[in-house]
Length: 115
Length: 110
Image (cartoon, rainbow over all chains, first blue to last red; front, side, top):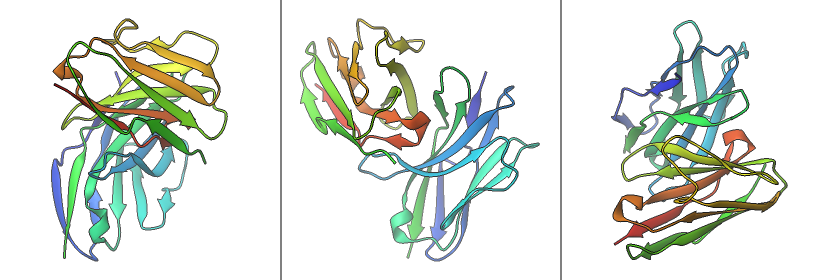
């Protein structure tokens, strides 16, 4: 069965520093997608970045990059130049690229950016 | 991109009552997904709603408790029936296979 594991319940980072949030996944599918979301205290889910299983290059979106290591089944999120507004819950998720298209979420990492 | 709105944004309800949550998308979409996020937990898929067919429910969720309507390609409703305090959660709808989420409905059941 598909599974997403986020082993860091909480992380601290200094403002302007880079931080890596870990995510490993387990699937027997060859075709899948990996997502990262930010959830501030307001509760909305903000899409950050997507990596397809067949994408050869790591995805990047502004200050966000996804360190995709397929053989290790890891999809870590790197946030560069952290800002105070980055303080939030971060979720890694995987989508089965089949009929259901449902997302399976990890347990999340609470990031606190310190001034 | 898709812009999604949800109503209500939050509500406090009494045990035993029902609440209907609306999800409106600014473009036509084939599949709409309803997720639940219990306090301090991750998101769990409740069901997938396709226009013109019955919703498909995930294990642990039943139609009698969470009836869903999908009358057209831009709108869906999720009803939380006969509520108990365990139903206190954030309920979110999603489209575009996970790329876009609505702002969520924060439900508290007393």
